[in-house]
Image 1: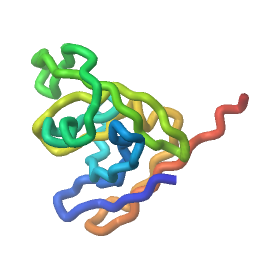
Image 2 (image 1 turned 180 degrees about the vertical axis):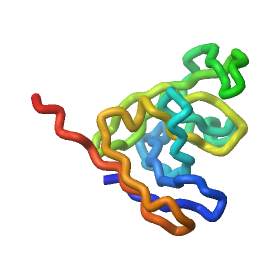
Image 3 (image 1 turned 45 degrees about the vertical axis):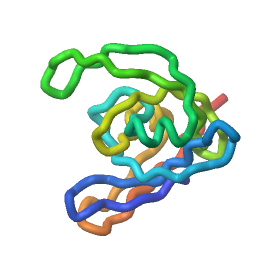
Image 4 (image 1 turned 90 degrees about the vertical axis):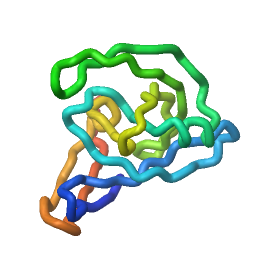
Length: 126
């Protein structure tokens, strides 16, 4: 189970383990953003420090409807106890966890400052 808390700024914050180029887990605090349909975004400094592999450029639609080109990198994230390879967008905003990463999960939040955030894997039935 992934755990976090709601900040005084009304953001659901969780810790995400991103593996560096040597396979060592590096914890990053990220905002859970259900309006972001990708996996994860990180600032360029984190991408460099982790040694992520560049994968190209991809266009995403921003919240205001405008298209924006993002640099995309591949990295490994420990999620629900497993290391999974995911595309990571470079963005100088706060790190974001999007719907692709939490897909197949149950998200529960106590929506008040200091409230608990819990993300647990759903059974796939298979």
